[in-house]
Amino acid sequence: MPNDEIDFKKISSFKRATSAPPVKRNPFLNKLPPSNSSKSSGAADEEMFMNQFEDVPRVQIFSIKDLELELNKINMICSNPNSEWEKRIECLKKFRSLLIAGATDYDEFYQSLTSLQVPFQTSVKDLRSQVVREACISIAFLSQRIGNKCDRFAEALLPTLIDSIQNSAKIMSSSAVVAIRFVIQHTHASRLIPIITYNFSSKSKEIRKACCEFLDQLLHTWPAHTLEKHVGTLQETIKKGISDADPEARALARKAFWGFADKFKVESDYLLSSLDSNKQRMLQGEQMSNWSSTNSLNKAQNYSNRPLTTSRTNSIGTNGSIESISRQCGSLMKRSAIPVPSPKINSCCKY
Image (cartoon, rainbow, N blue to C red; front, side):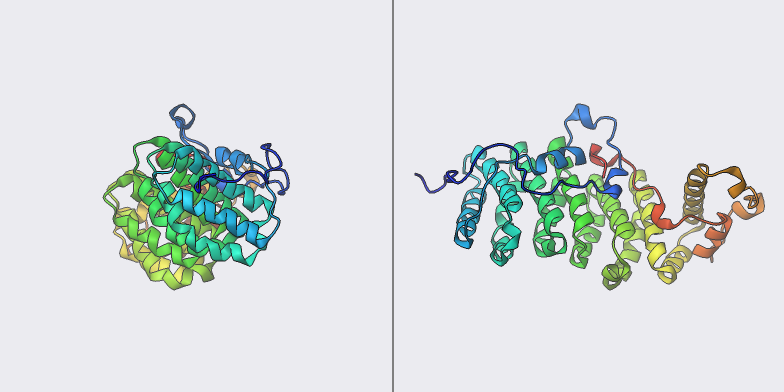
């Protein structure tokens, strides 16, 4: 048997793996509905990823040596772009099979992740959309399965995934976006923040727009202690995003601001006061609009005693603060409940 072939003798069947617990959908991911063209354009979405996570052959791991042998085969075939693309897809699915079979129960698995970084980078950059999609699905599944233990692996793969967002092939660009969303949701690692903020200077508006979305997501879902190390960078990046040339990127950056304000009041007040009056009014109007939409679901008597008068909603001074905006909105909802980004990012899926 040639060295680059995978031995599937230990696969008991090619039916859908059933040994893993059912995958739970994430509420934050679900808040982003698919764009109108996602189905017709063939773009990847969260539902596709969830359906494919465990739609792989069933395998068994009999020993550590057995696991290392299989991971070495995956490494060898996926790191070689000249390998047959069908075999590379087989390997990427085999990787998910191993996760389901309990590979994460072995310490050796985490040590092997370092050697798998280059093979996965090669797969994400592949010219075949099927290979790219399977690689992105496997990255997302790994993050979901091992959470913060995926930090180093995610750090190595994130730049390559972000570069793929500007790919003209919709299935490739959207697969990268969805994979990053899963990583941000399940792997809360501060080392990922500089990679995202760095790309706010990208020449590609698609990358800048997507990074504004990623920033919004992590600011609303990550704990403050994970973000503290980069609070200054986050502050400057949000300001850059609010001034971006692309209107969708600006809108997403404004939403990210409120996630930032929820965790870092002093820094967000300083950021707000550094903006010109027009940008301050945009933030004020958007927050009040969000507040109004949320509270319209409540009974009228819950807010009728706190009318928004004209004198209180027309403007905000250049020395404005988060509190001044909040007062104008009455008893504001928690900012973590602010609607998440526009669904227009790369024609991709919901969260």
